[in-house]
Length: 237
Image 1 (cartoon, one colour):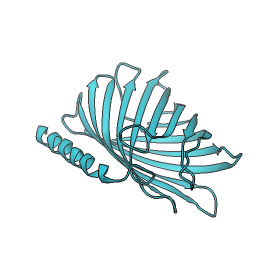
Image 2 (tube, rainbow, N blue to C red):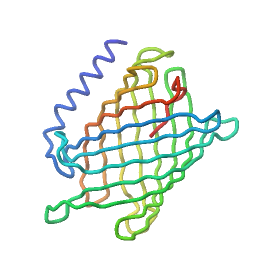
Image 3 (cartoon, rainbow, N blue to C red):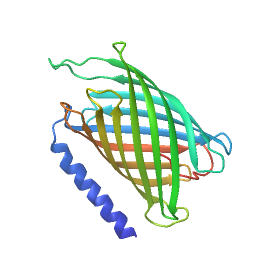
Image 4 (cartoon, rainbow, N blue to C red):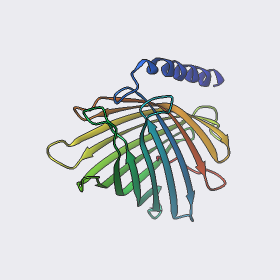
């Protein structure tokens, strides 16, 4: 198992060394940093806070997006499914056609339902369906639907696992006729638990955007902190 973890780490480093050849601009290589705090109020309620910062480049000089959100979920009786909602604030910093950067603010409310499934002692999956109400900078209001599939594989041992592999993909669709496809995002992360409540997850994210926007590539680092003694289940962001 150690050799498998070593090979996965080397493969990820090789991918990191290849992707920086892309130009540091929209459609090139960017950086994605994410922090997650999650906990349980009781057996029926849980909460989550997310902090995210994206850059157009890897030296962390050209900010692209800043994001914070919070959500609360309620367990559906006698199931491993949760229903809930939350709020998200975003500061986006795109470039216009003249190459000038400007700020754009966005507020979102969302409702979601998440289904968790432990397939085996080493493998678990989750499905999340989310509906967003987007309040954009120019008084534009949009509905968007999102579906996220998340999988988590324990690489070393079934109990008290330290190493894991995360694969997720998400499709986002605008609920409008003229341009329904928004984006499709694929993520591959190597998870390392550094303490009973903290894990660090470096990886790669690729986002295919609706035309005419180019495909975006990111090197990513996520830090996940549980505000309870033990992380009972892995859940998507």
